Image (cartoon, rainbow, N blue to C red):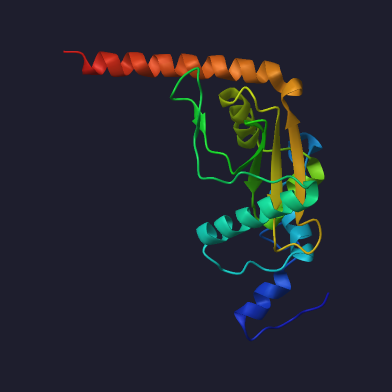
Length: 206
């Protein structure tokens, strides 16, 4: 066994990076039934492949990185995105809507939506390595197609500037592959809003 002694906490913290320490021992153990990895596993990978966080305001960093993510999409695909600050509202119900980060327009219709996801390095790498997208993002993808019947594809763009490898990647969803899920989601949202309407009506009745 080796022992390192530190005079500054910053050096001690840096030395802990990429190591399984006592506080991480459980978090890197296999999940129940031995399937899947815990978050700390991907943190270990990220700490070898990423720069330390800068301490920049997360909201400001997220907005800046979102712009870079959309830039990278345009560079990779040659497509030009409409990035207007907008709200798409469904013809089915005015209370069903979504705000696109970017959209591809063809023939006066928005046929593709692009959603930027600028996550911490560990989460970015977890999605890259597993190709498992968090459920809330999957619902967000479906919402684009629920709202806009012309939207045939949604591309999730993942960008993490702290990584010096695989800082950008995309995952695509095509309408033809998830149409049943889209239809079910639309019906569920209409039912939910009908219930909300009824409660509002009941509470405002005189």
